[in-house]
Image (cartoon, rainbow, N blue to C red; front, side, top):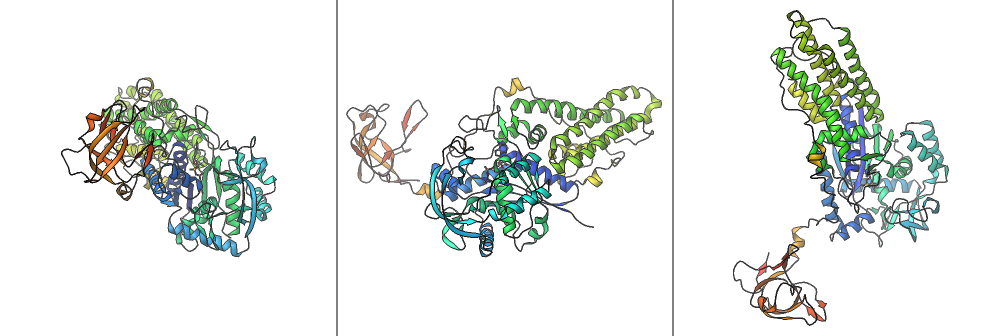
Length: 638
Ligand code: MSP
């Protein structure tokens, strides 16, 4: 038997911001695709990770008061830890700082250099630091970078260039002859319109003196690799290109998933790099739109960054996944609001799916002591009609998911769920139960409903694995969502007769948005750069904290806040302390305090301060830090 393969990737996310709903969407989409192809029996590989080199990361680390590697370790960890909570099951998590990745980037650079497609030249142009690239005049909007709304700076540099222009005609022809290479069509058209203008060669290096947080070029150690040339290669380095078995196994079936913001690097740089490096091209580039908040861009400063983990803890992982996949038409922008999420949860999940499942189980309990009945009576037209609806849902799932038509697949499943709820109302099992001659018919009706619930669980498994598992469990046929196979588990009539089913709690309890959500609306995300970053213990050890005794204190003339202290920390130190509003000099003389002893001296209102006295403030009052009981002055605090 031939085993088919499927390989799906997400962008690797920059480690300059913590995960938000946009990252969550792409990653959940890739997870759904991965789960769907597994359901079809494919062997799959699913890759995500973090992009850690470049100016942006150096800047973010600097702002956070740490070094790029520690900063990258911290934020990369946040991404890695978010995915399991969203039930994302990636096979591998790549970091561009991984030594194996670095090796592959250098290998490919050398290969392309040797083939003559990389050359050295000088370049002068307009550079946007945010995008880490040079801009052409015509790409700017009112002289500003369209993404960052900032004027780029003029910069001249000698650098290495990749002969991207050489591949322009080839790329145009390839896209022309492979209409779904980039999809949906609007993004294919967008790439084609970029290609209508002459392609420039791509600058793929940065001089080390300007940026050293990058991968050194294998053929010139004075330069590091441009972050996009480094990052795109993750898609093959994760498979251990060129010799790894994973590369041979999965590369030919690769599909990339991205949002429209990074269309150009993926639609133009990447295919031409692949071509120059003499690798087969990817199958599809799947491009989605943007999640917006209140119809605007998510923004840290406006406090509109939506954190996935907050939503998951409030509404559950499956309600969150369902909402994202049902609400966004893949390729178009969508608006996120918590109210819309709650509305979908109540309507589609609690009312439609939850209700169908709970009434099916309640009737099985009531009429058949909670055991799966046989199909006794022959099927009626109405049963056939319902089954047809289920088949249509299965067809829609099979046709739409490979095209990323998640909302259409879900709509078809929900048409079937709603048809089943109408079926119950029309058949009225409670009336059949009153008539002993209808017992066989009642058995067929309930069995039909149980079977339908089971197949629906299998169909929703890629979207809502947790709910699928719950349903199957209660129907007496437990299975891990990732182990489901449509060919077997999607077959009609496979429930075991006489097997007990269990009702359990509601799958999705209804939520009163006004009462519950308004009270505790999601706090705006604190950006990772605003958050106190974690530091290694070694950095803490750099601070020399000592116990001191205040020998002398006086006010500094003309200052309400400052006191001039003489503190004995094993030696006498002059320290200026900003405690004058809460402490009089006589209050502090003789007190034991904690002093930062190795602070660079500073001058405050003309007085030198050789250290700092620690105090705690809750915004209202200020208290000096002291020791539990007397300690010899100069003792270390750790
Ligand atoms: N590091 C590059 C990608 C390199 S891939 C070889 C990068 N990183 S990023 O952190 O900025 O991530 C961009 C991606 O995050 C988008 O393409 C998309 O997948 C996701 N999203 C970020 N914001 C988004 C929305 N508001 N809406 C939907 N997805 C968005 O670019």
